[in-house]
Every structure is written in structure tokens, then in C-alpha cells.
Image (cartoon, rainbow over all chains, first blue to last red):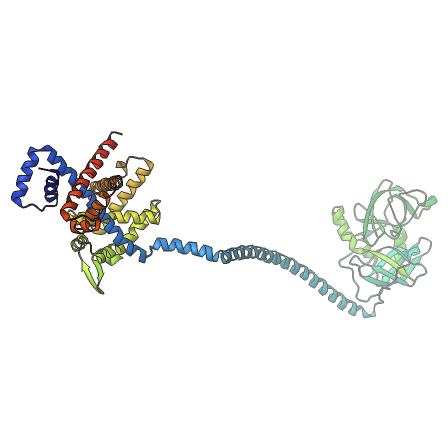
Length: 359
Length: 206
């Protein structure tokens, strides 16, 4: 059996071209000849490998034609993404910039709105205050209209100014004569800053006292006189205080009685250790129980802190000359005896006025 | 794709045929192009997604799909494809198994731990293993054919790959008759066989 014939038989056997009888003999040959069996096995492997190769190539070829014509979804997606990035990166970057800018602007805008809100509230508050001011002005205007008969406060600066305090509810005040002497345009300014034209009713040139009357028919101090004005003993070291107008605001001062007589042994006056400034002339000297002991009249020029006051008994003598609409009895009443100092002052300050005279 | 899971719809000659898995396997065995088209349409997207999820590229997915279809085609041809599950499930399992095996080969890992219950149940492992063996043989055969030189390469390729008759081969290569060509073929085949199995043995002892 030459090589050619053997191979022919092997091939015939492997491809199943033998008939049953031929196949049977060949298999017997294979059993007897291991070399032949090996050859058959090896040939089969080769043929199978060729088959596999052919099958694989067939499937690949067939599928390639299908695959080429249908783009995979994933591939499409990726391709589209790439395309989009390539094609639209300019647009995309512009869009991104716009988006970022928009968000930043929105943030700032929202913040400014929030700020505006608080500002608006604040302004509203201010506005309310302005409205209140306006209303007040209107009311003041109305009040001024009522006092149409009252002489208006001059718009030029006053010549002198001093202090006065009420001795009745209906507008009698006492001050120093030297503050008002020789002037007809006398104005008192109550604590609320409203000026009232006054007339000099009585004066005591010896004791430097003057009693004024606010020239308004309907004028009334709010409430009764808090302090009493009595003849009382002047005791050394008695603690006193005073309220006056050395400036446009009321000023409180306190001290003590340093001498029972005034300058150069003046028995109508007494001496105080109390700081005083120009403008406090006519201010009341009040003791701790709310009793008016005297009226400041002046100070010793060389020494600081030494003040002289007119004894209240001189005032009491003077009020006797007042008309019938003044009741002396009110001077005896004291509503602030039991109050502490600031409580007393809160009551008293409404009855202490600034007195100004104009040319 | 939902309704297609119960019945396979095959588009051919503008008419829609509904195929059972058995019919599908039979028409696959015949190498029908419309059947391959159907398998591509119904099974490839799933496999592509799967490979893509498992860190593979689109090209990897297509390679794996081709190999899986090849396996099924060969088994169908040999009438060895008897499914205990749906066709689409089987091909997906095969593809997954192949991809995992390829990955483990790349990373030089043992593969046994990677196969899951489903793949073992439907017996994918042996099928895939056989395929990889065939693949190794094919690349070896290709190398051997190159070493064989002319005219053996042409004769063997023409006969075993291009399925040409000995008559055609004889006239193409200028042999006087088919019998001469046949003798030449057997000589070449013998050389190829020796080359192939010697090389295989040699590589075994490397």
C-alpha cells in the first residue's frame, strides 16, 4: 500500500464515503495497524481544523455584511457623542459659560433683592418717622393757629436769657428782675420748646424779683405744681439742688447751703455751694423734700461755685400783690415729698422754663 | 424586543415567518443568511451591552458575537445543538463565557472561578473550551501552511479551504491530469500533517 493509496482510503473513510463493508474492513485494518489509526486520527484533526476555519470564515463573512449595514446602538451613541463634541463644542462651551453666568447673576440678583427688601423696610420705618414728623408739624401748625392772638417768637437772637419757674397752673412765673427789666418782648419757653409771650405783672426791685404771666387765655401747665414754696428755715449744710437753663436744655445741679446770708451779709439772700452759669438766674433752689427754698440771683465773680439765692419768703411777700386769679394756697401743696430725686425732677422740670428777652 | 422572546420573527422575502428555536437551529445549520440576519438583530444588541458593561469595546463585542455564532453554527451543523434554554439565552451565555475567558487569558487568571451556575447548567464550558482549542489549531495550521511553501500551500488551500475540485486545481496549477494533482496533494498533506503534529508535540514540551 503506497502513500497515495493509503491517503485516499483515509480520506474516503474520514469523509464517510465508504460503504458499510468497506468501512468494516478499514476499521479492522486500523485495529491491526496502530500507525494507520494514528494517521486517521491526525487526518481527522486536520480536516476538523480546516472545517472550523471554513465555518468561522463563513460566519464572519456573513455577519460582516450584516454588521456593516446596521450600526450598533452603542456605537451610534458613542459616535454621536463624539460628533456632538466635535461639532458643538463651541456652542456647548458658550452654553456652559451662559449657564454659569446665569447662575452667578441669579445668585447676585437674589441677594440684591434680599438686601433691597431689608433696605425697603428700613426706609419705610424712616418714612414713618418722617410722617410722624409731618403730622407733628401739622399739629403744631394747628396749635399755632389757635394761638393766633399770641405774639410770635421773634426770629432773631434774644438779648438775654434766664430761668423761670411756675408758681401757678395758669401761667404765673417767677424770675429775676434783672433778666427782664427794661424789656417788653419777654418770652418763656416751656420744656416742650414752645415759646409763650409774657407780661411783667409785678416786680421787686430791692430783691431782684419779677413775676411774669403768660399772655395766653387758655394756657395751663400740665398738672398741679409739684413743689411747695414756703417760708422755711435756712439751715447750714442743707443739701439742695436746682434746675436751670444755662443752655437750651435743662440742666440739673446740686450742692448745699454754705451760708445763711448772701453777699456781704445780705439777710434777704443766702449763699450756696453750687456750680452756676449765666442763664440760671431765676432758677429754683429746692431741698430734698421738694420745697423751694429760694431763687438763684447771682454768683460771686472771683470764686467759682459760690452762688447766691433770694430767700423764698421774699417771693411769698411779692405774690400777695398778684391779681385775684392767683391763689396763694397752691404754694403750700407738695406732691413730690415722697419721691426720690429723679422722680421729683421728672415732675419739676415741666414747670421750669427758659426766659428770653428780645429787643 | 419583548414580544420576540416568545416567538422568533424571521424577515425573509418580505414575509414574516415565526420560527421556533428548533426551526431557527435548523435554518442556522444550513447557513441561511436571513437567519444570521435575524440572530444579529435579536441577539447582538444584548451581547454588545453586556460586553460593554464588562469593560469591553464595541469591537470586542462584535468579535465575541461572531465567535458565539460560529460555535452555534458548527454545533447546529453537526446536529449537536440541543438547547435546554432559549436560543437567545444560550448564545448570550456562550458570549459571556467567552468574554470572561478572554479576559482571564489576558490577565493570566484561572477561569474556573468565573463561570456561574447558569453557564454550568447549560454546558457552555465544554463548548467554549472546544472552540478555543479549534482556534488554536487554526492559527497553528495557518502557520504550517506558510511553512509548507509553494505549490503545497496553494494546493491545500484550494482543496480544503476553497473547496475546489482536483480537476480545477490541476488545470490552475498546470498539472497534466487530476491524478498527478492528487498525488501532489497527498504529498503536501503528509508534510503538513508531520509539520502540524510535530510542532504540536514540540510546543507541548516547551
